[in-house]
Length: 194
Image (cartoon, rainbow, N blue to C red; front, side, top):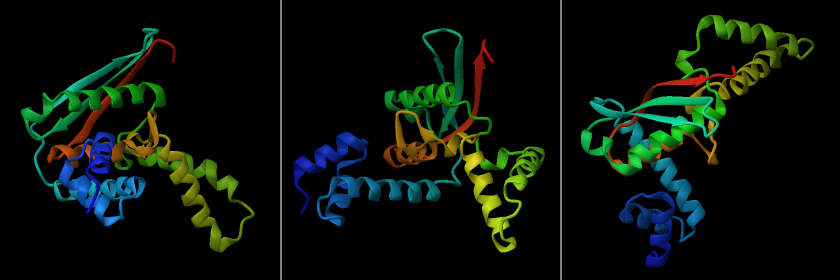
């Protein structure tokens, strides 16, 4: 049986329900760090189950840096107005907008990469794999492309406030917490400098 103090600590860290925190702690013998991993893994499973649901509400979240020369807007969608009006949901949208300002993503998800962009990157990295064994060239090239585009795709980027989680992990955790499908449906970054 999980200690109530540990359950409360895990709940405070994750924002996930007490019952889910208790189950995760019991599953890993009371280790909070392992329980966080279990909850994150479950968040992905919950998000997959809710993938077919319709997004009917959401917010436009914004962040403007204190220098006033760079900002971003993000559309964070969910299923109901009830969740869209929740302060934690609104804060999540603002955090993602702040992340967009800091990290400069070019694409929302992997499917948004155009064939032209893919081809340009392949041409650049093809030169780097010249001279490598033939049986490894394709694997090395794919690894280089994946690493390059990971930094350009918003949902795959490491969150600036917690590099241990990606933006998609944040969305999955919020989906688990609120019990609704959530998705970033669009973003834009503005800057007077670049």
